[in-house]
Length: 334
Image (cartoon, rainbow, N blue to C red):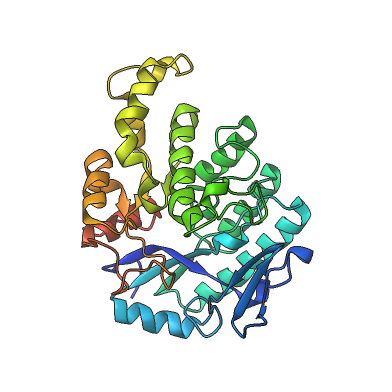
């Protein structure tokens, strides 16, 4: 099997790598057992209780492959754990972690080339270092792009990031955006989000929505017409808020002249890619209506708390696998 012949290609599948533990210095990451006997995952001052990473598909590749078989997933593109982006720590520690992560991930997927590929972690708070690591990850390690957070101290339209985007275009690889929980190593969450997992349910959607708005309003897609960006979870609230975002592009004083024409915002939105990990047929229908099915790829958050019960995402026809091949520059099955 290979991605070229796979019927299902999952691009939302995080990996936790034992060999990276402790490589960010005092920030960890560290996996131990808490006083209650449950697993305890520490990233800096953040602690995640009760998630069993060891002896799970997150860390055991044989368990992952078996679970993929049960779920009917032929191929997965593995990405960093969002808890360990390390986008707000000192650059030296972030670089050390990303290099080790990418080395280990590349070695893992090389052992299973017919089933797995990998996306790099990058120290986005240090653009020059991010460029260096992206080049190394793609050209030397054979990774297929990068998977980063939506917040790292620089706005997504900051001029300092233009050389990073240019590197993605030059290397002809995609950039995947996926939030991390607020407050791990960056700014704390808005206080009302501190209960009921609202930091995940609302906070992630807010970060994704802001990311899409910033890429379009900030002119990133216009400055880098060859840039391919995929946003997680259907782009957050963008399908529901499309009309309001487009109206702002036409009327608000800060909007560029390029965005004021009829359909200008909508056209740029359809340049982005989105995974279909949205949990609702109605939500997926709205997403398809505003961006088109040809800009959607399969995402499952494989082995995560919100993985669909049968391991699959809503609506995963062969078209989504062909879309993934286009996005990942891996050919398009006729």
